[in-house]
Image (tube, rainbow over all chains, first blue to last red; front, side, top):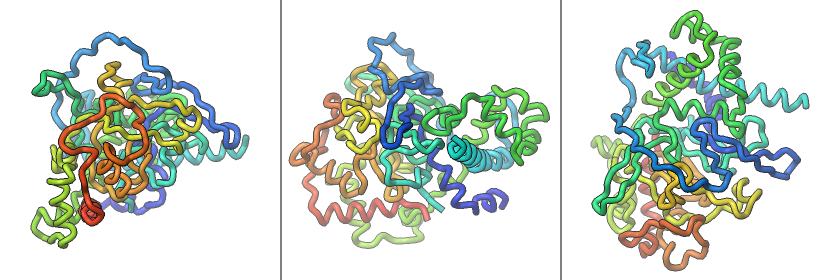
Length: 116
Length: 296
């Protein structure tokens, strides 16, 4: 199976797995062991967890309930914008993005780091 | 391959970024079985208060896998891309740009915003595949009748559901062993967390920082226990490195445990949480049971 074949790059996958499950503000160790903190807005929620909590906030309206999203098993998948695509091709592409793109980012980062 | 789908470098309480010197503020949760985390919704409890259930990230700030998947690419502490365009540019020069265009159209990579949404769609689809949720653990085999627990595993499962009171929060949804609620269980600060090293007054308010409601301060979503023995360290700040430490905390939090909570309010009570009176042998059995939740 195509997706399994690609997953044989286990080490590649291991290298990249961690990056998707976190998304937190930056703590940058720019000078050896000295760790400096910069309150960077979270790209996703706009929440700055480093900064002092901002209170009071206006009441948040209840978020509308949505159906749980179980693992996919249909032949086609309707995306959020309504586009319908082949599920297996979508999963295969997700696999590539999950692994290779992240590793590419790591590689570029390391090269740049070495050049500095 | 790793079954935990979390940071393979478990020595750090939080993950190091692509730049090799930035750290996140939290222990990265596993991505396995994340497809089963429901979208966030408010429910009214029997006491008339409203509580959040579901939502991605430990503080529930993302509504879906798609929204969650967009974050790490651009977060300076993670992959550190400067913009959506930066991400799409990297895809455009990759060997699989053609795959992307075949699926979404020839000109898709010229529209960074739309392409970035599709990146998130594809990753979310991958995370919903059975690779992330194989249900291949010893526990699943026992449930299917194709295997049997050892005596120690059976005793541990019994403790899980009775004296250990684990099922109160971790049995609302047997599929992933979480009821997806948010709790402040009084976890102490982690002195090894980079954020804490930088600022000893650092406090992670969790859901409280997202909702702005002080009653949510210190609350984090109850995590799955799937693959738990493979996903150390534990708790939102990685303060515990072994399952034994975790169980000892639940066992003695209100008796002999000596460390103060990171957020000393809204601390979950109920039952005998914090003074379970588990014996060493019972803790051993409970750990042995938890190890049966790892996928093979």
